Image (cartoon, rainbow, N blue to C red):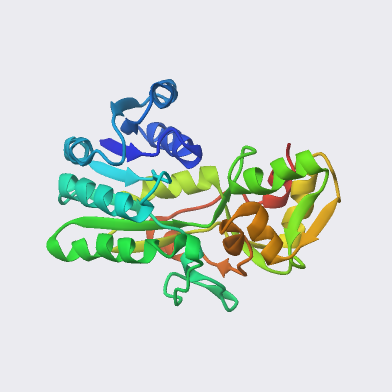
Length: 288
């Protein structure tokens, strides 16, 4: 089997490429720069030169593959339009083959306790654009195509991910890690390697399926920032900041970090046999 992947040289992408290769799957991957191409080659993938705006490249690469995983995001401008056009091109190329699209659980907004994929959606502004794009992706199941959507939680592991960039690095520089509000809100976490396994399994999911990529660890931000303070080299030094101050420092992504979310990945466990094994997030997050 051969799979074409976008975003393969990124944080989640690198783990996903490794997982695909471990499962005996040949990987071709979009590479927008020489650096990305070298990273992909070192991982064992075959680079395909191009960007998410190169619809013809995406369509052709998807058409040559047995399945597609779309992880890439273009933040340079017009993110929603670029993502929509890229998804359409790759779905056209993949035809009836599996096309796995990346969403995110932030679209559910605050949850009332633990919820699943059927919960109402109320996204913060930074992810509001995903709703229409995912609706379009899934609608193509009705025309004989094979879309699947994976919605990761807050991804951590290997001293990477958003928590590293927005909490650990600033904490290391300032000597104190920010915590938005009183820290009573929850994050739905997933280890990057567990998430990578879910992407591999999703290639065999039924058309139109949607899966929350969460590992079952719904932890309070107060506990998370305590762990991150160890990674930042300032154990126990936490600075409580208002949401307004967090937005000033971090931008609109702070509104997503402030969400109170608890989700279950039971559907992926039940339907795909997904079995997350990295279940001590606080110990992992505390690693420098």
